[in-house]
View 1 (cartoon, rainbow, N blue to C red):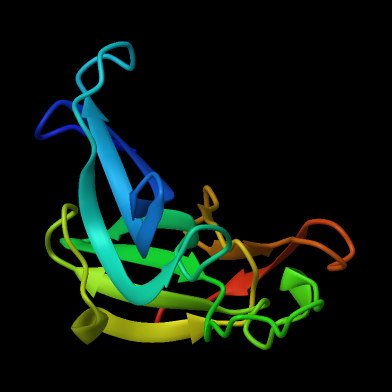
View 2: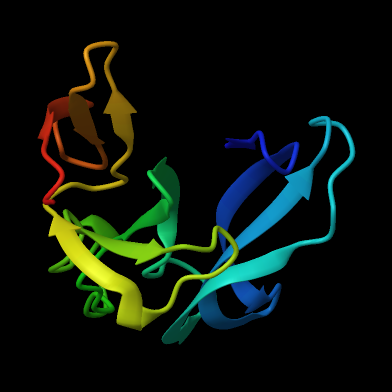
Length: 151
């Protein structure tokens, strides 16, 4: 994501607090030129702890007006029972949406919506309409659906 006012590129990604595990987070790095990148910082921290799959996968950020929206999932997240595939857990096809005026930080208090999609990303068309994508294991490929902002 490009921030013209700050002349910075942003890259958001899923991680854990430490390489060996910890709480699931959405991390980010900034760059003035897409070559040199600053050290990672944390934009969102979930209460769940783990080392593998978790509730901060596929983070996607979009700016609308002066608000930044963070889309992430799977939500609601529950650890799958032993022997059950990750894509069969209850919230696999679910993405929560968080709002913040600061592209550096989101909290659970900023939860503003939920989308029935896995790894959701938004696309704004040239006519101003929006689409949301969904994809994932056993989801039949990539799909798009109309997306409407509330308010």
